[in-house]
Image (cartoon, rainbow, N blue to C red; front, side, top):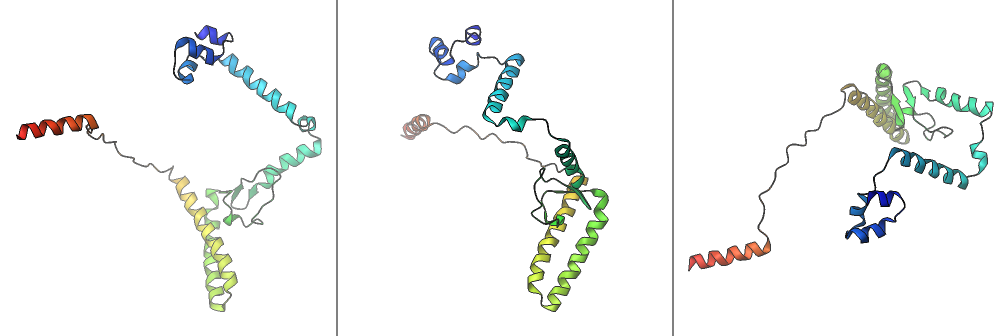
Length: 191
């Protein structure tokens, strides 16, 4: 059946010929060979390109290529690297400790601790002076800084192993028919 399917026999017809209830069982006869996978991928790319404007597939200009390469230099920020996508703006206006896309550099831990300590002092000052609007914004930055420090700690520990334990297999419960039969038998035994 594999040869028939590989030579063009539709799988749903092969399903009927084999007497399979499920098409999934029949598809087991359809082996995927590397050459077939490559050809399917090339066909997908050709269909995708045909549906897109051709100017998207042109060679970039020198200026465009330089801008693309410069993007990766701009991703290097003072306490790590930014994971923002190419040509996307920073929604946090470069307040990186608030941003989930910042990957902190472990070598900058001391600087990040200074930032955290400074934020604690500024929150205390704002509370003392009654600048409640500023307190809220500073607390968001403080939570971000503490999160980045925790992220550094998790990375330094090499990951966390979680023990899921050994599964326990419960004793098989009697089926309805077995339960009824054993109930009838136990009633007979009592009489």
